[in-house]
Image (cartoon, rainbow, N blue to C red; front, side):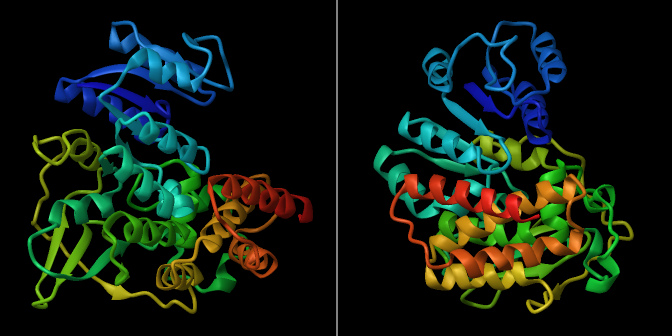
Length: 359
């Protein structure tokens, strides 16, 4: 199988390359943002020619545009490992090119899940999740009536701290996730539980189920659970390693090889608890969006969150200002309308500029 990887130099991209090679598939092309030294290492390690594209640095480019990258590589599967808003464009282009998609970019579903489902069905495209929670649910699906999806949340590094204790949290502390090695953006989203908010919205669009609960599970061993109508609950368990989700997505959930280490049950302790939505507002926002099929609020919270994280990274705000800034954007922009994809791009730009100009 020929595979095209977007976001090749990021954490998921690098792991995807390793998994693709182990499974015996061929990487025909890669995109990257600006880490040219990492891209050079990837090219050297593959030992065969691939097509490369970056809009930021062009020294390694073999094509001039993303569209040319699609045309030249003719992939059987696209891995979208781009983080943030930029991944939406790749998701849409992949579907419109009628290519199956392994999706790690949760923002695509958060921002435009209603449209992605529509055009994927029309184009006959399969979308396979690269996310430990959604991968688990996809893998657990049975011919039984599903009552509820249970997405586990590690809680990040600050879950058990009071809000006032987070006044002087540093950027380094916020991106230091206790269980997963990830990029700074998703790590900070985990610390605020915005990541779990996004995953709940993504699960709603991906599986067409509204009854979704986030469950606190600090060990990150159970990745998600399904509660069935007979009150039985099925869970998927493994060590905290994204290579499993990548492998399952690439193999389209048809073949499984031992891509990660075995889970040891020796001294294994698992704990769970419900999340206080009054303390962790992103969970409340997610439930409201799902219940009301709201198209505007996901765009607002995603754009404001992106801007707030940028401000935090540049030491212009404190960590515990991120959620209040998002709340501010919700108050100021909730009367907007989203009718099409163009509206999403316009509103995203307006909100980011608005937040960045205020702080």
